[in-house]
Length: 280
Image 1 (tube, helix red, strand yellow):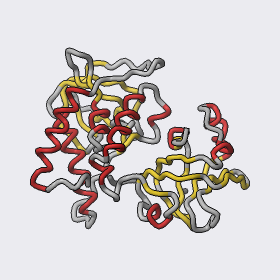
Image 2: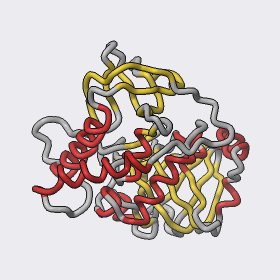
Image 3: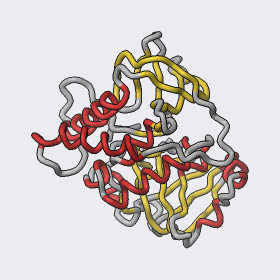
Image 4: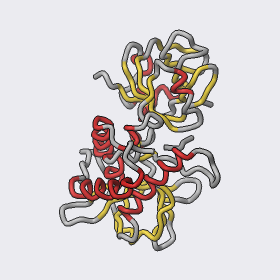
């Protein structure tokens, strides 16, 4: 098979908490739900948040754990880990979420549960002008990425737009080479993210099939360059979303997923939301 930690911008350490709070305060005023026409998720009152675990997980007062599954954030490494940059980024995302939702009543649009029993949902803050999307606030501040799995649910147009804004302005994580988009033409840079969630962008050189696998190649040295694989059994799923794997040759695309290594760096694309054509 071909995981995921996420330090944000280069602001002075003493100013970080204040800048995060100010950024969030401004975004709370301006960020609203931009519902897609086919959005069918109806948020329901879930009560107050008792505690925040990390940048996308919290516990409600009634004891339910909630995972914001449509975003990716820096993971908090184990105590004593040497991954200090990762720890700083994880702390910032967690602190931002706590600033947003800690002790406040939330609306949740739930779409199931994970294998640990956590509710998978989108979260909104009630407001007289309409609910405010928690994930969109984090994304617009550059403190989270849109998850590869978000594209398989409705109501994500606002998340994609918020991430695009932060990426264009190089806010938060986008200002740090450790977390910003990696160049597919630089396999060593992609390989450096092995075992973690990353976003990789580049031009597809060729698309080939071998056995039960479709190989989307970003270079001609297949044992060294970056590659994306798609199982043939999932080809119909991609085609159903309007993404034909064979049509990717010559296109510039953005890939989201966990970087692994099999000769060269590699991401397995299981869902259409992992692949975005950026040269339209």
